[in-house]
Length: 342
Image (tube, rainbow, N blue to C red; front, side, top):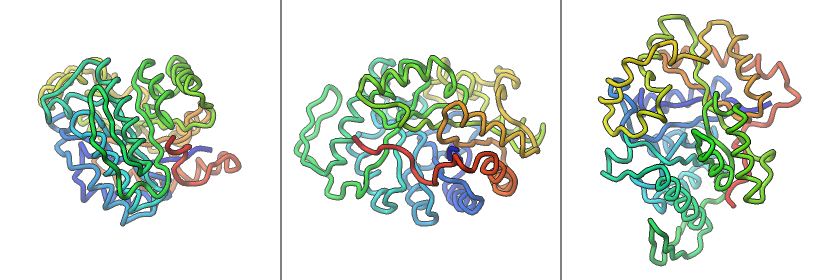
């Protein structure tokens, strides 16, 4: 069976609490964690946005968990050479425990911080080039890169990763799924898209076109769940109301206040569609098993409820043991799955 990770949300909580939550997640038996990598929160009322790599460095020293980003945009705010250096440094702190998730970004982070933003074609082209540059630098060799968007002059990482870093590419539609299969070591998406045939077909086509076997590549899916009832459901909706339109309406909006105002009209039922909201551990366990049976290899559970500790402890006490009991013979060992850098 696959792995179960916990999402640490920089949009909703400060870095010091996220580090404590990572420690608690390890104690509860989660296999890994990821954190969002934002300059702004998606919506103004989420209220937080510390620097993700600083948080991950602290987590590397407080836990033994595998960790990474879901996801970093290596094309506007961050020059890809700096991303390569940062994650190589994290890998020095935590050899074999680091993965890098990358994506084409959102205006609320990239345009807001830099004034730069392109259409999807440009963002995808930038991402392709950035991934190639990052991988080149991770070899530790001298590199001179003359690309369309990025240039380096005889540069190298003096401390390359001591072990290969898996690089996973996020996708929200078939075009980006194909790019993920072509350029990434695995796919990152949400629980709904992870099981859509058109998404998986596009991703698999990209992987095969690059000469790789998608059956040997991990699929990471973010699943929204709530431990509790209507109160917890409503507070989660309040913080994540933009979700149903994150990629068709709000990806182009640089102001989190405008996203908050625009999302106010999204019906609550639409926001929470597909969420598990329950205090019955079997409901949660069945959802994770369903995703594993549909080909997801790592489910990262995400809750918007304020009492994150309750969620973690509930999973550790009741859900994770149930998931493992359902099919222990198929469970993969804890750690970062993936073939590593090409």
